[in-house]
Image 1 (cartoon, rainbow, N blue to C red):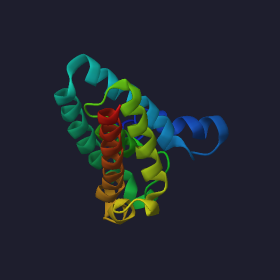
Image 2 (image 1 turned 90 degrees about the horizontal axis):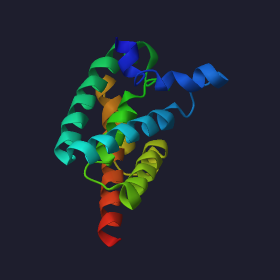
Image 3 (image 1 turned 135 degrees about the vertical axis):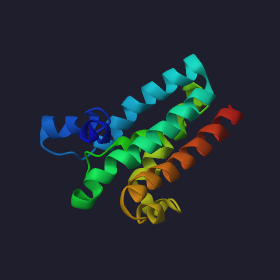
Length: 152
């Protein structure tokens, strides 16, 4: 069960199976998460998105904890990216806010050193650090998405 959840229901394992490397698995998982987060938001509203985000954060810490001690923040552990994606998309409309939020979230997660606080959060111990860096990156995405949504 931990493997299924930590890999965001297998999305973190797709690229390894296809091409032998899990590089880019966070983006694949984030795309799947974005579809779910936007569906929840459009169908049930932003409160439901917040509830879903909290649940995914808790699942991230719970599932990643089992693997982090042995493997560190392995590329296939992508539930943390799902948590960051859900956070980045809370309350945003499909266009253009959510697109900008998604891109900024992924940029902040990939280029951690260029976004203050993301790399520092990653240095927190264990599954907390694995998850919190994506939440900080998600906050960058959320802020950018709201700025764009307000301006457009």
